[in-house]
Amino acid sequence: MIRLNKIGKKFGQITAVAEVSLAIERGEIVGLLGPNGAGKTTTLRVIAGVLPPSKGQVTIDGKNFFDNEQELKARIGYLPENNPLYDELTVEEHLRFFASLKGLKGQERAEALAFAVKKTGIAEVYYRVIGELSKGYRQRVGLAQAILSRPDILLLDEPTEGLDPNQRRDIQHLLTNLGRERTVIVSSHVLSEINKLANRMVIISQGKVVGDDTPANLTKAKSGQQRVEVEMVGTDVKTALEALAKGIKVSKTGTNRYQVDMAGGKDIRPEIFRLAVKKKWLLLTMKQSERQLEDVFAELTEME
Ligand code: ATP
Image (cartoon, rainbow, N blue to C red; front, side, top):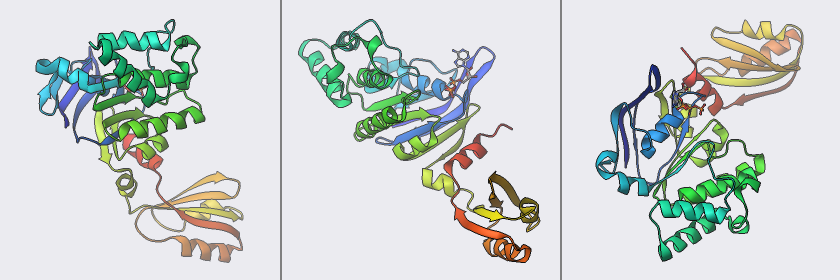
């Protein structure tokens, strides 16, 4: 189990992480989400043991980095943000170099390389110079490097950032496979992506945890709220809809399209229908929509 006990990190006057406590069980795939500057990268670096916290402790199965640095680092595969690679080396040279740094030699190193190359599907670019590779393949090489020592914990900092949609999908598949036998913490801005991959979302904002639940529970969190999408032709529709009830919020989302948000559990659709009849408006569509994860994210990370 990975346990973060009230960790905080300051850089001079800047508080990157105010206070984060988390317990992550073996086998969990956790999405770490938050806006720019929320403290995701810093949190991952602290968990990876590459940055000491200013306060609090990180333990992995009860062990800390201070007493067990070698052992814990071998258990962690870390893909840093922007995936720094040696562009002038071939993939083979790069991975051999990092395998040696991890203390792997001879047969053991050969096996580690074969394992990482197979898992990440990079055999076809193994002898190519890294600087010539597509961004998707570069990410794969970074992942191969991260799993060389067969870690049971993977920390991935925005692994799909800057990739085109096809490359994103490839990396997502790869992460789903790698996540089967491991504990994974993956940071991202892309909610829909994390939603598919992770079974738990930790949302951080201004260096604090502001949400921690399954994607399904997070969208249910404020179930008192309902949203109705309406397509209606008429005059002054927005104003009239707004006057329908207390606590109603109406936004125009396109030509003749409106989004009606209503606090409280009441279904507002019958009233919208009656209003349309009374005003002789033309009602083309009306449907209730689920609260989107994006809305929850925006609410939770809204700056005070
Ligand atoms: P992004 O999504 O933009 O990568 P993030 O959530 O990963 O953001 P961090 O990179 O952890 O956020 O940064 C949190 C805060 O700490 C920011 O205000 C950042 O400027 C600051 N910070 C991070 N690293 C350092 C550093 N080495 N020196 C000074 N300030 C830093």
